[in-house]
Length: 295
Image (tube, rainbow, N blue to C red; front, side, top):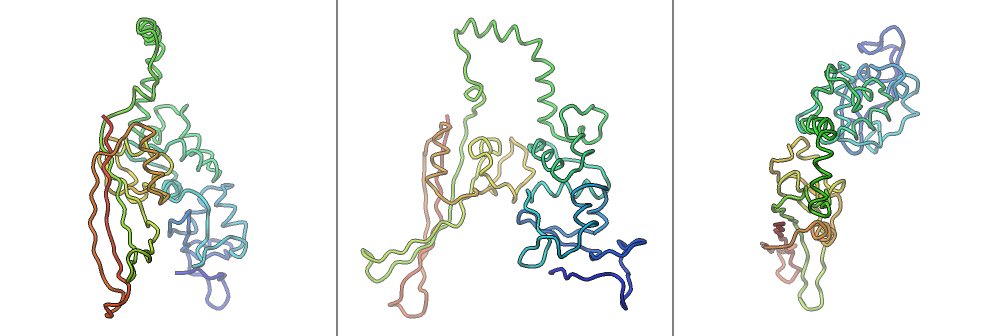
């Protein structure tokens, strides 16, 4: 549903609840495209915090001044996944994040961008425990705080242990866990009548990642797309992640760099004709999985 640059008033009057005492050039219901994710919300939600970026966009500017996508939705080039929490905060100026929320620092960055100063302050590590948002942030944040509190007490013991062993192991090596990650992809290609000379391969559409959430994030980091399973705890398993690129070798390199090695591979394929003519090219589709292990 594309939005038109309509104005309240005129012969049709103003029936929207977002009009208030002044005439707004925006419709009551607004569609947004944020980094490829589509959101539908009310105009009054977007202007809930005065002097914020969204308040300036949707109260100080006209619809014609704002960027739109090909379907007429207002476009924001920001993190589409994290915007759901920005929108939740704007609805009632409160926010409850899921357990094991791993994106606190990135959400704080988004709050700073949208000029939501109170939200950014609440997301800051210096927030007191009485703050309702910080209490709901993340189990991992609690663990981080406990580690910081205990660091002074454990400092001498750590140094003593290091002197006994002669050298400290790298934290990245100490934290590495054993486990399996499965990389999968669907591919298709055509083979002409002369199989030796006419093979037309097509680009891999998507590389899927299956395994424990914490391992997948350790290996692939920012290149891991979590949009289909966004709130998965770190010790749970998922088969819905995929990579933001489609080069198998790049995925293999990342796995090798952190100590994984391939232990198994399987593939299935089907064949079909592009038409009823058996002399036409055949289309082969396949699904392949590579299993990687780190001991």
